[in-house]
Length: 137
Image (tube, rainbow, N blue to C red; front, top):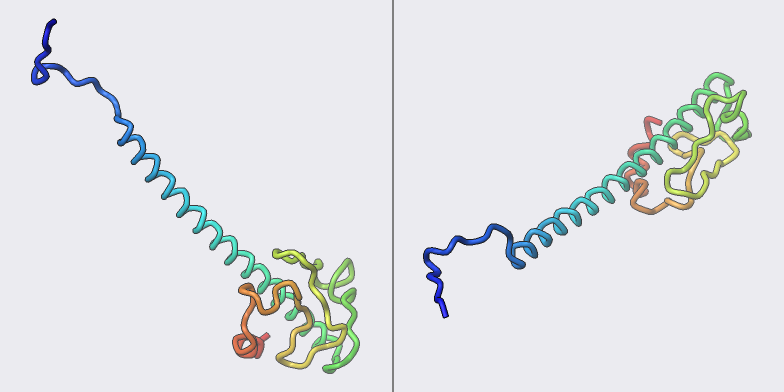
């Protein structure tokens, strides 16, 4: 039987099972971080779209109110604001559900449009934040 000298033998190139396992674990960790970041980005994007929809409708209502000389509490159908003869195309909620309208010209600091699916959720302001933000809408 011939004995090989392990000091002079050339080592074969390649990865061991342990090295391969470590590489796979690192890749899986990076992918999981990516999914968490993508979820947070989507949530922020949906929240921004919801706020912009509400803001745009609120500005259209205020513009219509000022142009027509309406007072708070006067009847205001959503068809006046949306559609072919209106100011805007009716917004679609990025979060599902549908927007609801008050049907009257709102007082200053009150919203004409809301989305019951997101009221009180992370996609909208708290009551205190909304009061601060609505003053200039």
